[in-house]
Image (cartoon, rainbow, N blue to C red; front, side):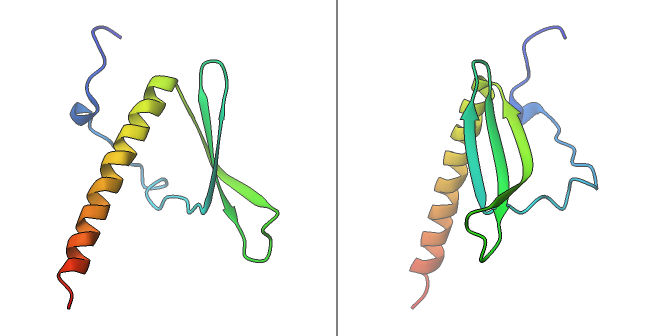
Length: 91
């Protein structure tokens, strides 16, 4: 690869059809190694609160983890603002 990495806003993201439906998760855990963060996303079934089945694992370099945190914070702020506007408009 030559040159610096492109800014994420310049990258065309393609989602293959088999990935498009996504994976539901109602639980997550984060672990770290020397060079990576490991994110496990899982599902805890009702009535089985002592067991979580991991449905997906994502391994990130620390730099990418920082960008993910920033992107999540930005999206949560936008979500909260939109929700506040919706609730403010109700009588």
